[in-house]
Structure formats: C-alpha cells, structure tokens
Amino acid sequence: MTTAEKIIAKKTYLGIEFGSTRIKACLIDDSFAPVADGSHSWENRLEKGVWTYSGEDILTGLRECYADLKRNVKEKYGVTLTGFLGMGISAMMHGYLAFDDNYELLVPFRTWRNTMTAQAADKLTELFGFNIPQRWSIAHLYQAILNGEEHVGRIAHITTLAGYVHYLLTGENVLGVGDASGMFPVENGERYNEKMIGQFMELDEVKPSGIKLGSVLPEIAAAGEKCGELTKRGAELLDPEGDLEAGVPFCPPEGDAGTGMTATNAVRKGTGNVSAGTSIFSMLVLEQPLKGCYPEIDVVTTPDGADVAMVHCNNCCGELDAWVKLFGEFSELMGARADISDIYRKLYTNALSGSPDCGGVVAYNLISGEPVVGVERGRPAYVRTPDSDMSLANFIRAQLYGAMAALKAGNDILFEKEGVSPGSFTGHGGLFKVKGAAQQMLADALGSEVSVMSTAGEGGAWGMALLAAYMDGNALSLADWLDSKVFAGMEKSTLKPQQSGVEGWKAYMNNYFEDLVRS
Image 1: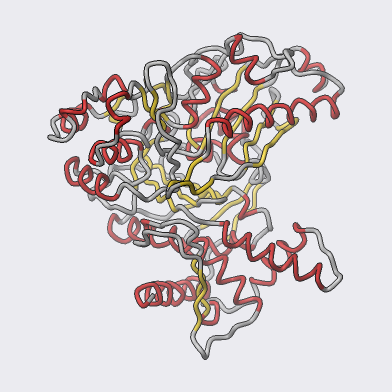
Image 2: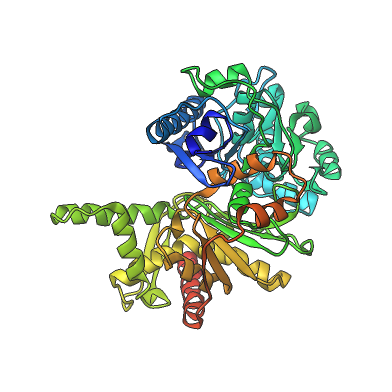
C-alpha cells in the first residue's frame, strides 16, 4: 500500500505539539516513520509582567498548523486528509490555565517561563517534603490564593495547555500521567498523591477559597489508554474547510517531557534523555526513589507512570539563536549572504576548535528567570576577564556551554548527592541539528555517553504521534514496544566524554558561578 493509499484509508497517526516558538504536526504511517508535517510559528509575550499566549493565539496556531500539514499532504501525495487511526496533543508542560464551569479562561495563560510563584513553591515544598517547582500548576494555584486573586472563587478546572487543546477537540477533561505529574505530585504512577491533597486542603489560606482540589484537577490516564474521540465541533475547529471527519480516537494528552522521552526511546528505567530547544531539560528514569528533596530536581513520570528525575531549565537556545542571527546580519552586510543553516553549522563546528574552558569567556543565556541557578529575572549577558582569549570559537563555545550550564548544575546535584550513575543519555531537539558539536559538549558536561538518533530533529510531535500509535491495541509495555517496533535498527551516533572537555567544563562552571555572584 502506498503512502497516499494509507492516507486515504486513514491508516496514519497524527501528533501535534505546542512548543514555545513553534506548533508542529507530525503524520506517521504504520511503519512509524514521518510521512508529512506541518508547522506554525508563534511567540510568547510579556504582558503586565506575565509570559503568556492568548486564547486566540492557541486556536489560530492550532488551525494554521493543521492547515499547513493538510497543504503539505496535498502537495506531496495529491490526496486530502480526512481522518486518522489515532491522534494526540502535546504541549509545553506546567504553567497555569484556570477555567470556570463553562470552560471559559479566567486569567491569561501563565506559562512555564514565569517565575512569580516562589512563595507558594517554597511553602508547598516544605509542607510536602517534595520539590514543587515554581512552574508547576499547583504552585500557580496556591500563589493566586495567597495573592487573594478575584478569579480563584470561580475556578472549576485547571489544566495544562495540552489538556486544554485536548478538551477543545474531544470534550474530555483528562491528562496523561506524565503531564499530570507536573501539575501535582502523583503516586504509583496512576493518581494524584492523596496525602498531599489532604495537606493542601487543610492550609489556612486554602480553606476559605472554596477550592476542592480533587475535582479541580483533570483525570489521569496512562499511555495506551483511549481518551475520547474527535467531536464534530473539534473537527470543525481543527479543519474549518470541513474535510476532517469526527470520531478519530485520541490518546492521553502529554507534556513535551513525555513526548521527548518517547521520541528518544528513554522510558525504560535507567535510560535518560535531554531535550534542547527554547528550554532544556534532562529526564532520567529512576531505578530507585530519590532519598532527598532538591529544588533543582523535579520528580515526574514517564507516559506510563515510572518515576523520573527531571532537571528543567527555562532557557536554552533563545540567546544562542539571537547571536547566530546577528552573525547572519553581518554576513549580509558584507555582501556574503548565507543560509542560516550554514551559519549554524559553521559556527557550531568551529566552536569545537575553541578552548575546553572557552578561554575564560562566560555566557549567560538567561532570557527569563532560571531557578536552577538562583536567577529570578532574565538578564542575557556574556562576561570575560581582561586576559581571556576572546576568539570566535571561544565565544560561540561559551554560548553553547551557557545553553547547557544550568542543566549541568542540576545534574551534578543528582549525580553527586544521590549517587545516581549518569549512564547514557539520548539528545534531541534543535540544539543537536549540527552533527557532533553540542552532542560532544553535552557528553563532557554530564560525564556520560550521549547518543543522537537519525530522528533527533523530529522532536515531540513525532513522539506524540508514536503515543497515538501505541494506543492501537498493543499488549507490550511502552518500553518493549518502542524497542521492538519503533527503534529496532534505528541509526544513531554516540559520543563519549573527553577528559579535556570534562576538565574544561569544571573551569567554565567555576567562572559561571563566580561571575554570577559578582553580578
């Protein structure tokens, strides 16, 4: 059966992921290979001190992304999309979306990028004996209660961006367990922690609010479960042209961490992955529960409910991209206009020739606050001493190190205080598109092997499409299914840490924190 015939017969799976700068759709067939994609660029805005996207941004972005996929399918295969065997929605995790009884948004979406909930996060962490990061939904809810915000008394539901879009398309208020574990702690990989819900409800500030946390949070589902179908209203919302038919089964909506783990075959205990785009985070599936509680390390779950140590950093490629764009402008000014992909490739590859410690140059990619390194507000900067070696290679190498520095700081705590073995990580996302550069630097930073698969550029939308395919009557565990059905024979490159790079990172991090304190 040709790809066109599969599309006509609706033998494909669709994943849509709302990233920080791009909404992407990935269509796969029964071989699990991408056959078409679509995208829509968008940007968060800082409005009245809040990083947000409007409700209209979300709806328009969803439609435009699907329309782009539909156009690409028509151009590539000469057929029209009308349905799928399954589909699913993923999005940037956490943040705060609060709704009334009619599912009307009560306040603008507060994204993961906001660092406005320190008071609530600290109080809840102490109360639970469990790290509650500032970006988690429960921290936002509690902070709104502490602030006496008017909308709190009208809250009927809170959810994530993935959960909201899933609701719009299916009418089901549910979340995958991985995404849910970033709203409120879960236990046994299947339900919210009942003891902690009780502790929250007993707080003096919470009692008068009328919040019933158990009913406000969305239901939880694990990978493989069916979570509703595309409604007629949802089909019209997604495809106003009317070609898309209702009835498509949906898998649980997931966060970008869960789709990243899926896309890198890192859901089995002992495996890890690093996702690097606008933000950067690492996920290491735990063999044993953590003994301590650390503000730099979140405990979330895989899409099938296994505990994961997550180091999530708000900033990664944003400042790096700005510098690459600047060099692109310079090339145009010199009359040597170059393709932006070539500029990335040449700058990143040249950075490998720089000093392992970046010659004393330090870059801070902090467009927004970064709790992992104790920075409240964004202040992108670079710093060097008068005797530093300010070469182009060292400067770009410092920018690449800066994109990973907070991630290294968080993982160093995991490795040194918990004795967790770094093992091996798989990298995916835009940072790894230039072969070998960021991959080697990350291996040196983590002191572990780092692999990049041939699908590294596919990202979370592909991972979401895989989760939609996994829903289709599988008896295997998610880890076994990925191993045997999706990644068997997958091409990948693996780089080991180099001692010079490991030592270079130590010097760089010493400079990083020394300069951070001085500033």
